[in-house]
Amino acid sequence: MKPFLILLGVAAAGVLGYLKEPALRFQLTGILPAAQGTKIPNPLESVLPPSDRQIDLVTLTASQLPEKVTLKTDIKFSDAASGLSMTVDAGSRVKLVRIDGTNVVVRPGDTPYSIVLPIAKTDLMDQLAAAPPATPEPAPVATPEPAPAATPEPAPAAAPEPAPAATPEPAPMPEPVVEPKPEPQPTAETAPAATGSADVVKVMQDSIRGGQIKEFGFDQVLDWNDGVDETVDGEAFQTGTVSYKAETIFGIKTIQAKALIKGGKVLRWIWPKSGMEIK
Image (cartoon, rainbow, N blue to C red; front, top):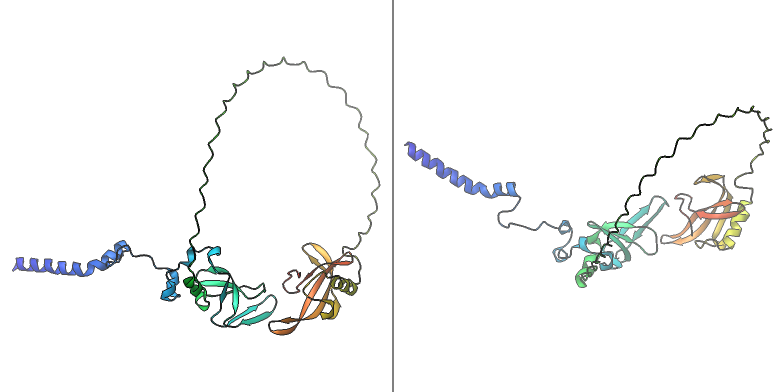
C-alpha cells in the first residue's frame, strides 16, 4: 500500500508541474511560453489603427514629418493670457510643430498659439502611410587627427645660490602726522524724474502715425487714455493705453494695447495682460 501512495504522489506532482510550468517560467524570466523573445509593444499601438502601427514615430526626425496635417474633428482652444478662445473646424490644414508621445502639437494659421491633440484626430498617419519617410543617411564619422609628438621637457635650471643677508639700517624717526581739515560736503541736488514729463496721448499718436507697430493703424483706434507710471524690469515708464478694433477669427473684436513711454517717446508697445511686445 505504501509504494502505491508514493507512486501516486510522484504522478500528481508531475501533472501539477506540467500545468504550472508556463506561468512559473513567465514569472521567473519575463518571457512568454509561446513566443520567447517577444518584441516589446509600441505604446502607440493602443491609439493607432493596425494599418499605422508599422511606422515608429519615435524614431522620425523633423525633416521626415510633413509640414502640415489636416484635422479630422473640430478642435476648441482658449488662451488664458489674452482671453481669446477659438474653434478650428475639421478639415482645416494646420502646421505640425512636433510629436509629443501619442499626441501632436499643431499651430493654426499664422497664430502664435500651439494646440495639443491626439494623433488619431489628424491625418498624420495617413500621410506617412501614403509617402513613407526615407531613412536619413548616417552622418560621416570624423577621423581623429594624430596626436602631435611630445616635446621633451627642458632640464630644470640649477638653484641660485642664496644672497648674503643684508644688515638692517636703523629705522627713521616718524614725522608728525598732520590731520587734514574736513572738506565741506556738497549739497545734494534733487534727481530729475526718471520718466520725464510728456503728453502721453500725443506721444502715442505720433508713434502710431510713424508706423512704429504693424498690428493696427491710427484709423483703427477708438480711444486714447493716460496711464499710471510703472516700473518694468527695474526701469520706470510713463504708460498709456489705446482701444482699437481688429478683425479676428471670431469676428471684429475690441482689443487694448499699452505704450511704455520714456524720454518723450514710446519705447515699446505691449499687451496689457501678458506683457508680450507688440510688433
